[in-house]
Image (cartoon, rainbow, N blue to C red; front, top):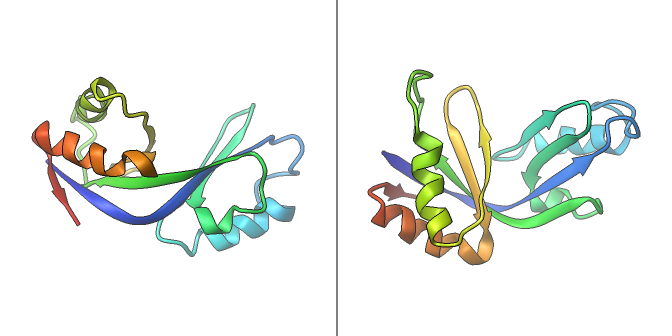
Length: 134
């Protein structure tokens, strides 16, 4: 299976859905407009929170954020019947002590690791049998 390195740094932001007035209003709405023009973004919501992953440069003004993430993309599209893809990625990274943040889309999975662990993560995944591509 191929895993493609993605360029740039990303941030994970947290918003309280009761205080932002909905996902398309105010500062969050402006950020979403900018984020959708980037290379990658993901908005996930629940009754307790809204989480946004976007290019780090777009999110500097927000306090509830965790920056410094780098991105790997599992080359897809992946069939919904496939099992164990994320666990086959997460397990060797966990053994190596590398923390991850994952996002899934209809077609594939994305794995984010901290910038300082990016090279080690690529080497770890390569040693686990994944083909790492640019």
